[in-house]
Length: 303
Image 1 (tube, rainbow, N blue to C red):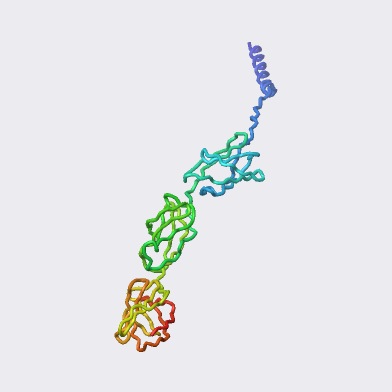
Image 2 (image 1 turned 45 degrees about the vertical axis):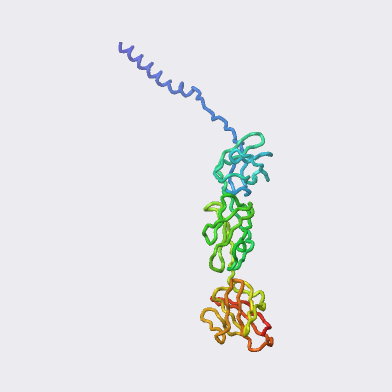
């Protein structure tokens, strides 16, 4: 029995010693990774700018554009111009303001990835005011001004010194408005299509400086006659200087307590002149407003 047990131990050890060689000789199965398919769809690397108004130019840099390709904003197809295979350009068509999906579609029907693109509301452009200067004493239709530009529409509002005033959109290039009764000087005009979408400001001048256009003889009386002074921007308390001597106006003294200046309206003054001789003489006239703005000096020949 002892001999049999010894034989079994030897056989077991031999078998255990042969296990490793048998396992090493068995071939290992290696799994190879599947070959990846290159992405050949139109690729966008950059969009410049990322938002634009209708009519604005957009440039896209990328790859795989092919010979024919179109840009899409939402469902709107836009012809695109490709240069050197890596750059394309398109013009934003007339679209409502908002966020659109921008993607490219090649001539073979392959579509690229979509990106967000913002179409901005059209910015109004203010080019000129016609006229850009009115008289402070202008009335009615004389105060009508037209703002000339482009991109005006139903939502366009006109602002006078940053306050919205009544206006009328005549066309996409013109807005009509009437200048309110305000102090003289420079005033700012701008237009807006939305609260954040404003034009540049233009200056409108309201003239207050008096100007004499003509002087004529008026009614004649026993010892005085009238000189009618016509022009613009005369005021209730305008003074008249005759050869440097002030007549009328605030604090002014009538010459010899007789000669007077009568305000008719902002375009006419009457000077009551008391001549000491019927012979005509040359003298100078100037109108000066309370703010010390003076007209040009006019030479007059009269008694």
